[in-house]
Length: 117
Image 1 (tube, rainbow, N blue to C red):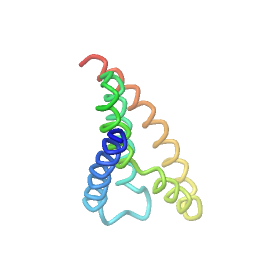
Image 2: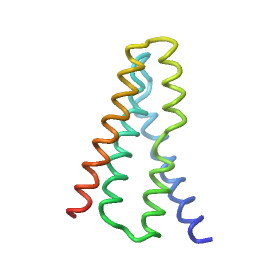
Image 3: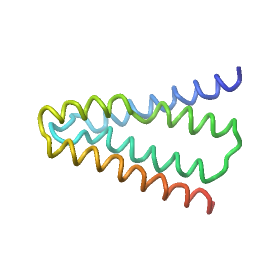
C-alpha cells in the first residue's frame, strides 16, 4: 500500500511539473515540440542521477517511478512524432533521433553524476 502512495503522490507532482513547463513553452512551434523535448531530456538526466545515487527503494519509487513517471511524456512524444511524420519528415527524424540519442546520453551522464555524489 505504501508503495502505491509513494508512486502515486510522486506521479501527481511530476504531472504538475510537466503541465507547468508545457504552459511555459507555449505556444508550441509548428516544428519541434520544445516542451516535450525538454521534459523528456531533463527527465532522462534526472532519472540517471537518481539511479546513480543508489537510492533506497522507497525513495526511488517516489522520485524515479513517481515523479519522473508523471513528468516525462512518452504518449505525448509518440503523438507528436506521428504528426511530424505526416507534416515534416526531416523534423520527424531530427526529433526521433535527438530525443532518443540525447536521452540515452543524458541518462548515462546522470548515472555518472549520481554515482559520484
